[in-house]
Image 1 (cartoon, rainbow, N blue to C red):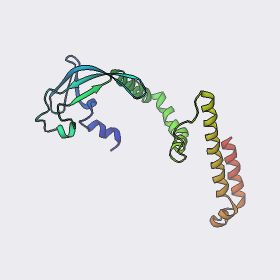
Image 2: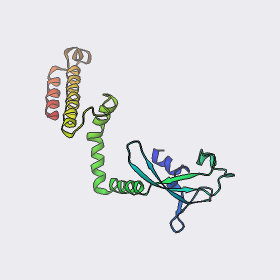
Image 3: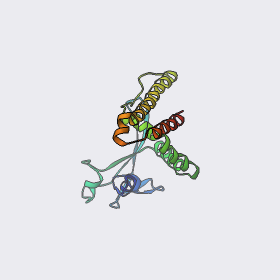
Length: 185
């Protein structure tokens, strides 16, 4: 079972609840109303303002699903950001459209593994410099180092010591190295 399937079955996620647009209420998994309570605005650590609609369950005191649904001592509250939800739905539609599906599938193969390698194996998680030109230069250096390390790994793989251990003929190593140079340029 993948992550999305687990989320679809989890009763904590409001997206799995029934929404009644006419009354502006949700119906929780225990068939209780969760009506709109108030609007709220929060400022995050970067100074951005986020607007939320707060919904609160009428009574969670004797609910048998409370332990699975919420850790709150009182009634269950849910915060809904309309702008965020709309943008998320738009992104989902874009991702799963037929022409974009092929582009994103190819992107996973071609690019994402390299960025994952930068982050996971090289610990390059953020840029040290500011400004577009400086960031381009910094990323260019990271990409160069990545390519040089790939070349060094292939050279090591086809070194005389490795050839003796793996019994790789010399002519094959030259052929593979030539193909690698063509592919990288």
